Length: 359
Image 1 (spheres, one colour):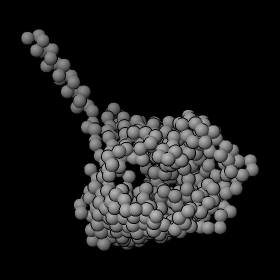
Image 2 (cartoon, one colour; image 1 turned 90 degrees about the horizontal axis):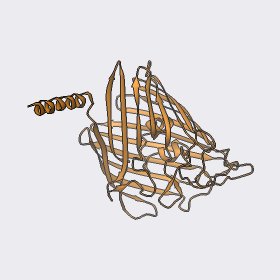
Image 3 (cartoon, one colour; image 1 turned 180 degrees about the horizontal axis):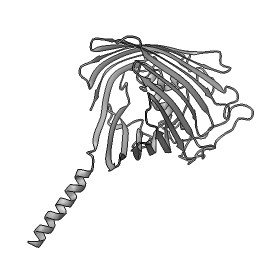
């Protein structure tokens, strides 16, 4: 009898602990489409980054909450993790922290404030898609973590827009204004060697520690139909970028947006230190559908060619969580912002069609 009472008491205690925990949410999306680019065969691929994530909070009382979020990327056409190679399992983010009247503080890995916000001001939602502008024009070719490990053919940074070993802060929103910041350690993460270009330029050996602590800060404003951003970031090899962006809902159907960014690579590239990126875009809702349109250009010091891109897309919502899409894009005079070399295929036409479902 005593054992039975003890068992009931233990079950009750565990039940109380379980009730104190907020249920963990599983979320993500799956995007699969067919795409074709100049010089490539027809591919089964994606328009958006495919995610699988877990997040949750615990109420600690007095307005304080503990929270966590981990998120991985995967390629549904093969069932493998995104880009394979040396990408971390939770490539998207892995953060834990506290939230209260002071705002939100998190530690771990995630998008820098600049990278997280700048994609909101281009028509393709900041998707890593060839029809969109975020990957190399909105950010003027800037890389947030050039000293992180490489993947695939061994030439690309695993983290062009995220930082690891970092602290993240988001202030409370006041009258539409918010401040967001991140700061990372100098830890070596198995990165590639980076050769300095030009007189006095600094080089980095493979697996180098950062020469400075990377940081990013962004201020945002959201009030009804208008939104704006101003941001500044410096990465571990002392490349800097500043950016301004804005959008306005001119009518209930029409949204206009613009982004301007300027990158300074002077620490490692004195030959071509500055790159400027400009994007002008619009979206127009038509019933359950939405038209996307944009123009972007990127200009690098001492390079005569100017990269230009025009894109047009359409999304048709089947429900709140599922939409069909089709895109067409043309990019001319594709230039490597570091070397100044024009691509072997200087003009690329790109087309895709597919489906995206969120869960």
